[in-house]
Image 1 (cartoon, rainbow, N blue to C red):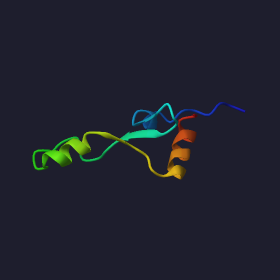
Image 2 (tube, helix red, strand yellow; image 1 turned 90 degrees about the horizontal axis):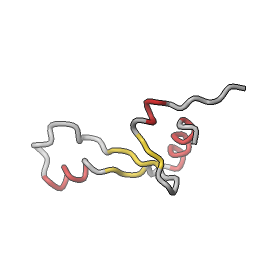
Image 3 (cartoon, rainbow, N blue to C red; image 1 turned 180 degrees about the vertical axis):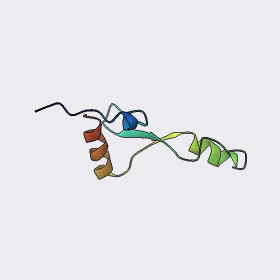
Length: 65
């Protein structure tokens, strides 16, 4: 049986932390940030973890982890 391939598009967008959580970038932080207030702008530029355990499991399967 052949090896499972890593989903390269997903691998560029998420990282697995040392404790096994999935770290992702927040949305709305690429452009048009001048209309946002500073609190919203700093929150959107930070990283967050994926909350759903089911989605985390699916992501780890796609990344072969």
